[in-house]
Structure formats: C-alpha cells, structure tokens
Image (tube, rainbow, N blue to C red; front, side, top):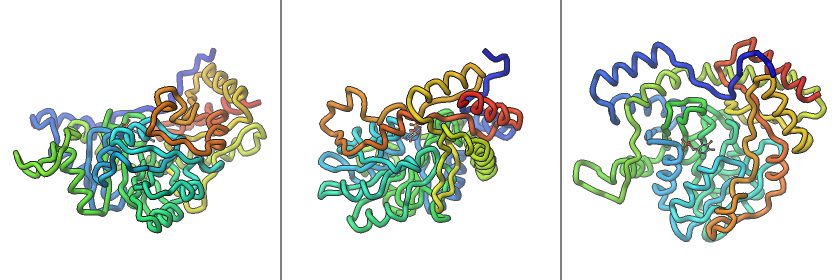
Length: 368
Ligand SMILES: *Cc1c(COP(=O)(O)O)cnc(C)c1O
C-alpha cells in the first residue's frame, strides 16, 4: 500500500463565496425556495442557452418532471441508453411508460442513432439521450429522427453541465435535465434543473414542482413537492459562476491524460467526436478485457488513486428489471463489451498538478 494521500474520483471544496451565501440564507430565515433558487435558475439559462430553467429537488425528479410535462405515461415508449445510471430507467418507469433500450456507439458510448431509428414505432413518444461522461450524443442525428417522427427529446444531461454539440449548448435541444448531486460537475448535495425554450413545458414543470398550484389553493394539475431550497442553491451558485473555468480545467487534464496514455497499447483512450464539446464528468479508459480492467483498478487503489467502474452492467441487467414488463431490451452487444472493460480515473477540477502526475504514473504502472 502507498502512503500517499488518497486522490478521490470526485470531491467538493467549499469557497468563501459559498460560505457567505449559505450564511446569508441561514440568517435571512428564508430556507426554502426563494431568491437564491431564482438566481441559480438565471445561471442555468445561461449555461443551457435556454429561455427557461426550473430548479427541482434532484436529478431524478428533473427527469420525472420532464417526462410528465411532455404527457408521457402508460402506453408510451421512451427510447434510451442502458449505459447509464439507474435514475434514467427509474424515472421512465415512475411515469408508467415503457423504457426501450438500444445499443450504444462503440467509440462515444452514447446512443447509436441508427439503433434509435430502428426502435421507433407508433407507441414511441420520446428519445432520452444520455450525454454520458459529459460528452454530447450525436444531436444532429437524434434531432432529425425526433422531428421526422414527431418525438420529444428529453436530454439526460446529469453529467453534462456546459457541454456542447456543434457549438450549441446541451440542454437546449429539447427538454434538458441536469443534476446537482454532490459528485456531478456542479454539486449542491442534492438538486437538479430542467431547461427548455418551450413556455408550456416550463409552466408545467413549475406546476409539477409545487403541488400543481398556479397560486395558493388554485390547482391546475396533479403535482408534487419537487422544490429545491435556497440553502442548496447557495452552494451551487458560486460553482455555476465559474463553470466554464472548471470545465476548462477538466478539459486540460483530459488532454494531458490522453497524450500520456495514447501510446499504451493495452488501453483505449476516450474518443471525442468532431462536433462534441465535452465537459469530462468522467475520464474513462478501456482495458483489453474484464480481468485486466479489474487488475488495473486494484493496482490504482493500492496506489491510493481513486478509480471506479461506470457502469459494470447495462442498467436493466438486474433481476427486478429483467422481469419487468415495461423494460424492453434490444441489441446490447456493444454495451456489454464496454461495461466489461471500462474504468474511470480522477479528472475533477480540484486536482493539483502533483495529483495529475500521480494519476498518470499510477495508470502507467497499473497497465504495464
Ligand atoms: C446522477 C444521474 C442522474 C440522477 O441524478 P440525481 O440528482 O442523483 O437524482 C440521472 N442520470 C444520470 C446519467 C446521472 O448520472
């Protein structure tokens, strides 16, 4: 075992700005949704280049609210990727809709548009692209499939704050859904935001967030309590204000890693599509097979370098989902291959130069 300090795969560090804002909220006595949430929403409009941003309690709630705002429910099908966190699937099942999984692209690990097109039928209501690890899906093709078939696009952008496709902000191609869970590029403990240019969708998200009320005791639809608090917004705001700097730092680290690892024959470095502007929620390498992947992770851990597998199995590959009548599995050969060989190393924007050097050396050691 190494004596060097642990380099975590993700972390949060407080700033004087965050502490001042949190104190301001606590002292104001207004702890629930208020002016700080509004300020956070303004910053999210800037991030996603959208007319509206509606903050909600977490990323799973953003997906649920987005699906419900598009009137998706029983009898409807939503096409998505199984190379994702379980929230993508749980949100679809929550609405009563069917989750239809298609295979991913072998290079980007994002939805393969050709597979999406094949899965569309008369029950399909939406495509839910997951911008995995902070790299955009091929939105040119997904927008085309959606418009040809009159489908909604609900972007699972939980890992993609500030990412772009063809210079256009992620979260603006349809209804965008972001998470502020602690480990994401912007973290407030729990939290999320829905982004959209559509006035009606924005209005419905606001209704769903607050018991379906337009004003006190005036109910327009069935709703829930999906509100975010000013305390959480106070933690997210300073991070949103420096989002482009943190994304730049992540990007520089990723480029440094890729240069260092490109010549290692037993590793595949991340592929970045020409039109993608990634924000590196994770920096993920692939080993030649499962056994060598697991050995590399073990070696990294023994060097006190954080490493994880996102994701070890397709999201439905667990008994409760395998037997679920609203989970539809199609071709998944690429997804399975990626799940068996992928691993992620620390790329977060708090890494020091020394830590980056240790990660590089650690991976070189582990892979040789
Ligand atoms: C984190 C995450 C979510 C859910 O966000 P929470 O804020 O944890 O509810 C959804 N989809 C993806 C791809 C995620 O990584």
